Length: 354
Ligand code: UFG
Image 1: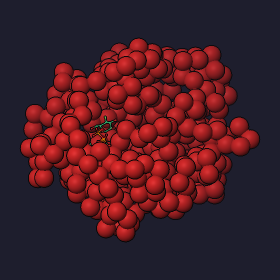
Image 2: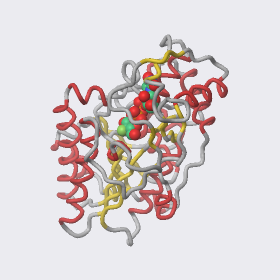
Image 3: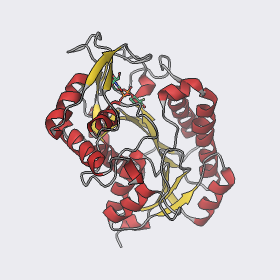
Image 4: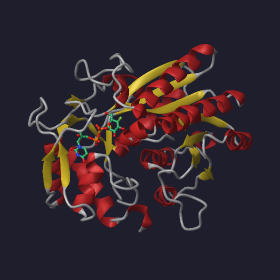
């Protein structure tokens, strides 16, 4: 047994896309994982005991994890888990994340994302677990004032939707908590655009309903579930008029979480620090379509439609802080992101239900 195996990590939202890939990396690095999920955006396995995504993670890791079906709004169930285990650190993914839906039902987003986080923090405080890695988003930057965007860029004031504001508010809550008493350690990981899948094609992204995001939409067109892609606007101030984003391979992101966990477990780490997790390079929507077609030898039919509300021209990260302080850097190319997305989608045309 190495030292990490004695280190129990509590993971919320573990069944989801970024959660499941990150758990795989935590297990591979020797940590013990206790995961919870409420199945709001994931599928239970056949025997209902564990999500299908995490069953597959166990196979890939050759190692077991502990899973509980728990909603963070149910504080008593959370407490029961903290009574049974001794956690060194929490990695908090659980959240609703559909931008459009958040505009229709903002209170659901505030109750789930903000209320759930407050419950979690109260239980952590009660059980004296004071290290948390939080799954935040580049959305907190709102409309970029400059590019590439670094962690000192203002946050909050130009967030364009309730989902983004929940991430911003939780960041602020975490900053306040870390200042309120000694011993709290907080890492905010601001993700850019996670895409791709584990290279095995055994786990990947499986959104409910019609995808909101570009890459799962492209891959569902490629596999024939959707007819054509709608490109939201070609009159932006970018290389070809379509939006530019910093797409990052989900396995790079997962490795970023392991680096953050290692950092937060050191005696030296204190307080609250935000890190961008991106590649530092932006690609346009048309460049992504072309890369997918080339990498996967499939044609992606698309039409240009109006801009989508709340979209910005370009956003990409300055990633130097994560490299300097966490020793982490993304490694995988856009080609790999496309190939791995396609391997997952073509092997699992209807996601985890296959
Ligand atoms: N796009 C299309 N057609 C689609 C979907 C997207 O043209 O069907 C375009 C968008 O207009 C945008 C680009 O593809 O230019 C990327 O859009 P995504 O929806 O994939 O990603 P976003 O950049 O809008 O948002 C993502 C996450 C958010 C996160 C944000 C941070 O979905 O959760 O990045 O920048 F907050």
